[in-house]
Image 1 (cartoon, helix red, strand yellow):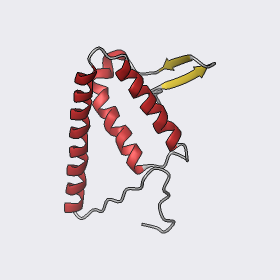
Image 2 (cartoon, rainbow, N blue to C red):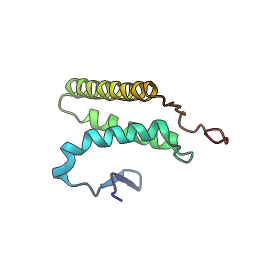
Image 3 (cartoon, rainbow, N blue to C red):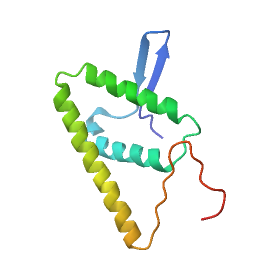
Length: 117
């Protein structure tokens, strides 16, 4: 198990970050990490903490954009990457359904039915 990101708040204004990820692996790891996070967000239940986790992710993203040297370029890159990711998910879902599979997604905080699948 690796710590992807730990964010701790000490007092009112002291945020501290920690990770087990190696800086040299980060460039190759980001696409995998993004797709894994997206899959987790649409397929697993987070134990009722979804609003808090998503709010923290959004706050970190907004802070990153706020201190970015070129916000418009960063937003453009994020838009392109997220568009490619959603396209790959749609293609994977279509291929699975074409091969006889069935994909059912639940929104965060929505429990699947108790019946066996």
